[in-house]
Length: 409
Image (cartoon, rainbow, N blue to C red; front, side, top):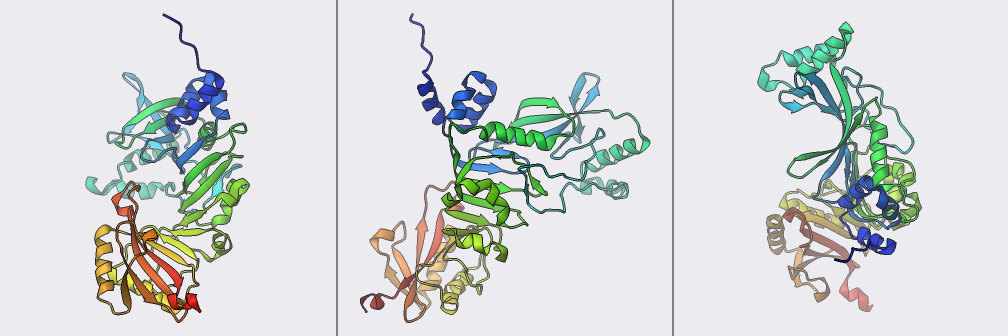
């Protein structure tokens, strides 16, 4: 039998380029022999999600998570410490007793999301005693452990704990696979940066990591990122940010012109200059029906208005007088979409017509609402079967167009 020949360097790069991104980075970490080829191969990601807890390289896949894991010596040796049957882990730095270390210090590359009221605030001994005194069904399952930790530190006794930094993969069904475990010395932020750098950094030869959808969120103060990440992003989604969009300019400065849309929790006046330069502005919340929609193209991703409020939003365009070319998209449930259509049919201000062939997706019917003597709003309903979740597949589109009779004047 002839001996199989190894792949040529060019062929190896071709295989790597079309490999699942999770498998690709894990093989690069585990196999030094392909690491150079992997870093020199262009990386394209459909979705990239980074939070203070870890990173997704692919939607509906598994989550690469780094955390501090507490262990204790038992009769059968070193084992994970459990509080009420659940392994005790933290997403922040701790001292030898497992108590949170404050303050949180910024390091180069970090993005300051401005969430000063950190969810991991250190509770006082008095607060913990009050929680422990509650009936078991009302207690925080970690309160008793946290109180014991505080008492041990107060008594200056030897800590029974050993802490490790643990890298694991968490799947959709919550199964967790431990990839690596290393000694801990209050360096969680460095570990998180190191992991992201391993996955996404060091790609000078391969060019920027091209990302279609980048999701950034952080409920604590700092989102830990390594310096010199080279990301070329089409669509940016930001959650829990209290410091404005200017904090993202250094991260995306090299390819800022590639941004086609930015989606935020809520609109903020200080972001007006940045958002005015972007083709599409997305909002995770819903506008009040009487609010002026400030950008020419907007998308409201989680629209949960009553049916009548959508009618009111459309009619309010007669008040705000948006310019021709403005386009607003509202994501709707299928049932709500049909109910809104029925309301428009029953309202004399809306004129029902057949949608032109170039726009037909699933619903050929559309509605025309007169704004003024120069423009109308065209309202139609679209369907995107490529969306993973049924709740995101249907939308109501509002396009401001010149009135037909004005086109011939």
